[in-house]
Length: 67
View 1 (cartoon, rainbow, N blue to C red):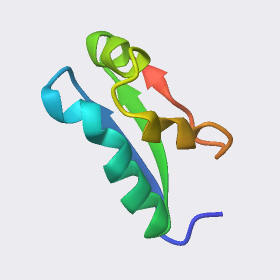
View 2: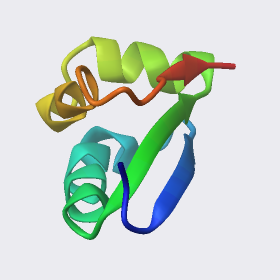
View 3: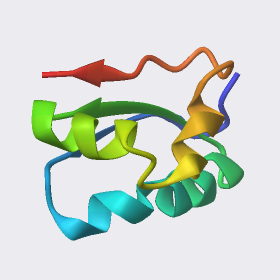
View 4: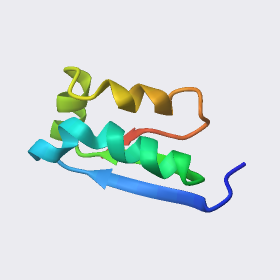
């Protein structure tokens, strides 16, 4: 269980999405449960291997969604 609560992180197709895993790592280290919501294009950028750090979301119980 999270110390701080649940943070819903919405990302769109802009260059910083390639490094979103760094932010996710920092948030999780600070006690947040992170739910990543990506626009369809941002999801395709993540799928192409932009930032492997987002793989840390799998197995956390967090839901990754595309809208």
